[in-house]
Length: 424
Length: 109
Image (cartoon, rainbow over all chains, first blue to last red; front, side):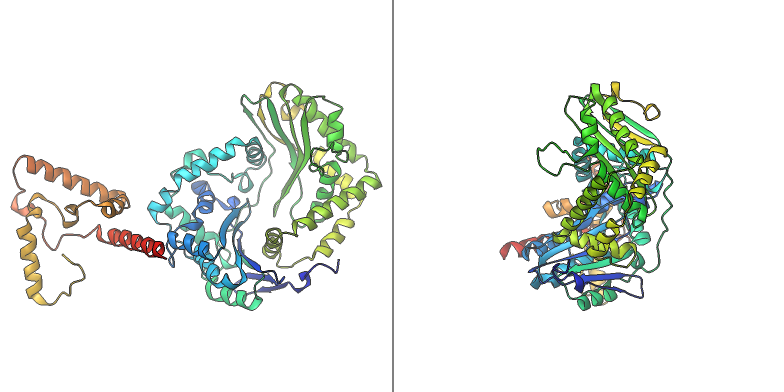
């Protein structure tokens, strides 16, 4: 693995304010900088549900240093782009541009993350965009099912949706957003990460600009898994269903075992329009129904919990058979997994991870999330070794944890033949 | 009435007060910013007013229209005084004009 360009030159520093700085100079012509904040939708309180959705849309609004128009034109003028992604745990503001224009875009990035003004009329002008986002999300059944399963599986924190709930559309105002930023965008929960930037430049920026709010801010609550069910009956002939049980938290060995298990079972086709021969789920379900279907293992890891299970898409009449067949495949793994399957799954997992690092986006994400969660950067070689050290027993134990755990389920479509969670 | 004019001495203030009262809109309970001509900048600034300020403005305008219909004025004690007049629209209007100028600057490039 020594051939990986420049990865070994990654530097990580932790400032006294708690801010993590990580940078890697890969000598590419384009640079990318991200501000990672532990301020995802899990930190929303009952009073401000939906505020992270608004924040996601408000990245281009007027700040103390520049008006919305200026931010947009300024970033465009240097050929860069400014974007924000948010997950349940984190918000990621990132800019990318050519190396020479780093200073310009960095200024806008810092403005957006530390000094947004949230003018009341600009915030209320976001309401149509919130509605548009929600309408787009409603078009994809996957979004509904995945948000649904999180809402059903957890009592708090992780049950919050990425999207603004209906009753809060138009009700989230500038005060909510200011308060959320005050309480959650603190130095100790932020990481400034750069790709193709000098480490000292980042350190300077971090010390000067990103230490206005110190401390840990509002502590998040520990996610409590409860195991529930959500069913959305609609006219669709395809039933999307996900059955999960509590999984493992990020960074634990168990999480690695679950990832390997996910690939043992099948995590999506590797050949377009192929027959998916290596996916146990796919092969198992194919015996249960002749209609078109899809089955893959669902795995997500959060800082203090996780979800693992199976995601199936089937014709509504065959839904019950498909789901039961998928789950029985997981049960089969509890009895042990063959050496060949294990090696194959590990290779697929390693390939997927390493390929995600090939793009600058993926690499920045990986650096940032590692900087945020532990401050220690694990090189791809170290991660690959950890993957290799997962044993067949670990995988079988992970499968057992799924089979014996309390299940949560979310389904949407024509649910006549879809079993309830206690009937599986 | 420029707000940036130097407040030099009682002479100028005295003149301003005389002019304010001579203009007469205070007799029907209006403030200066209620009478401003509504061009596109002013419309945008009005859109940005906080709800309470906007509602107060609407109330004063309705009252003034009513008085105008009756060809009447308010009792003298209720005339808006020069000192009480709040230029509530000014900051918003300035911001709107600044933003428009910024857009024009950029379009020239």
